[in-house]
Length: 189
Image (cartoon, rainbow, N blue to C red; front, side, top):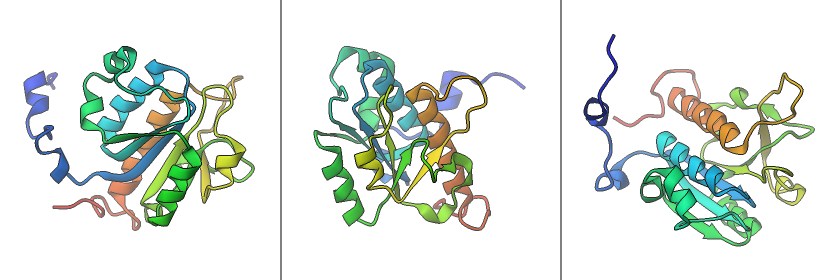
């Protein structure tokens, strides 16, 4: 085993020129009232790594071109399709009209563990809420379901960017495996 060089890793990767032709994960992500520019930058970078469909920055969530976002995102603000929407509820209702299932990354009375989702739940929109208060009840009321990451320590939650990373990469895994548990079922090619 040897560590791959940057050039070796970059082979066969999408570029900004070819990004539109790539089959993206049918996941929209909605950030509602995130406070930290560094969390937003980190979420951009993770979104690029999982190759999500689109990122919505809502409420007072900071958005590019803030230098702290750009520094943390490392260019992913160019590779991830994003939109600022002042009203999260309006953005969610537009997605619902397109047949997108709405899901909060939040602990609720009926939440599912993040790894128990099935491949037939796509396309979906994952709502990620404020670092302190989480996803608002107003937005939870619009959700089809919620996902939570079980907590085993004395804290009740994870950093928002960390929690998002765990959830979105498991969504990537679930999508790639598909409804029947067959690897590559949802992949083109």
